[in-house]
Length: 261
Image (cartoon, rainbow, N blue to C red; front, side, top):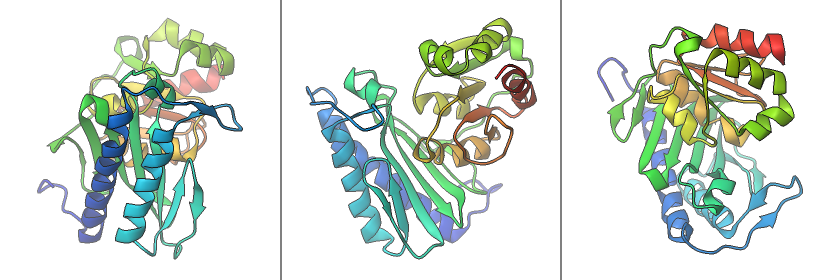
C-alpha cells in the first residue's frame, strides 16, 4: 500500500484473504471456460452452470476456514449467518451469460461488509488477467499497480458503459435515448466495465437492475479509485441500481437518469 494510504492492519489482512479467495475461484472457473457446460435456468430465469456452483463452494470453504466467525452471502447458496460484524458477499461468476458464450468479460466478485458497509472489494476478471481490488482508506489497485479514475468533465466527451441496449430499452428506454444523445455509449456488460471505470479507461457505467452480490464489491473499488458510486436515486450506498463515475461526471449522470427515468 502507498504511503499516502496508511493501512488498517485488520483490513489489510482481510483484503489479502479476499484476493486469495478470488484467485482460488479463478482456479476452479478457468479450466471449465472452454468446456461445453450444461446450463440451467434458476427461478428468476437467469443461467447457472457447474462452474458457478463449484466456484462458490470453493469460496465458501476457504472463507469459512480463514474467517470462521464471519457471515457469508452468495448468489448460488444463500446466506450463512455469522457474528454480525463482518459479512462476505460473493458472486462466483458475474456475467454467467458471457462465460457460457466464451466472452472474457465475466469475473468473480468478492466483497466484505463491516457492520453493513462494504469495506473490501475484489473484481477478479480471470480470462483477461486483470484483478481490481481495494479496501477502505487504502486506495485501489489493478494487478499490484495503483489505479485512478479518469478526469473527464464533460458528458459529451465521455465514454459511458452499460448493459445491453435491449436491457436498457426494456427497463429504461428514455434513459437510453438521453445517453445516446449526450455521450458515447458502449454496451460493456458485467464487472469488467466497472474495472474499466476504476482504471480510467471509461468514465462511467450504469446498471438499472442490480443484486447486492453484483454491486457490493464494486463500491470500495470505485470509491477508492477516486470515483463515486450511487443508486439511481443518488444515494451513496449499495442498492438495486448503480451509477459509477469518475466523480466529476456524477451530477450530470444523475440528472440524465432522474429526469428521464
